[in-house]
Image 1 (cartoon, rainbow, N blue to C red):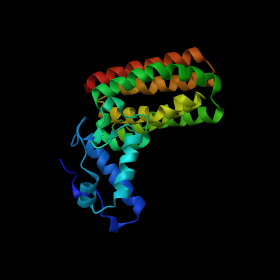
Image 2: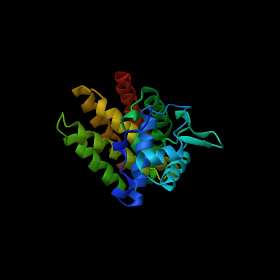
Image 3: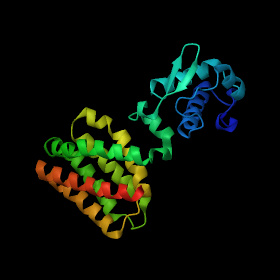
Length: 243
């Protein structure tokens, strides 16, 4: 199925960098939305050039970008094939942005939750030893925003919750954990957007996040790990309601 021509500005409408960004984003979203399903072959370069009034250089750069992110594979004399989603680089920030609401896929969210269970409790334990005072203060600030958010102000609460978890991974001092924050943030944000929490669940979430901050202040790694594990149990319950 062809892309909608309105997704991409013609080459004359703006400078080349903007055209390139618009085109790769539109092509990626078309793949994410299933207009070019896994295993299918994308239109030929010359067809894309003609349809969108863009140069072959722009098309080739877009395809190289998607190939570097694991989304497509160029095959000699056979065109460019869409790779299975399991092979996509889900740690890539651009790809997560292009996926948008498609991140809210029950199977993917479950996989992210498993990754969080493997990482976050240990990250919390490390943060109890390694977090700077500034990082603990930033974590507390995010928690205060969560605590003070109006009951139905999901946007403010969700943004603060996502920021809280970004800070926690950074405070662990583990650079690999920090690299995971993009996919965790994207999945967490969209899952929270759709979670139909009760008032009791909301209050419990605020409480356990506060206990983790206090554990870091006390440099109590065991308490930090327990609080993180409790958070993830709540996340698992929220996920079960989304399925």
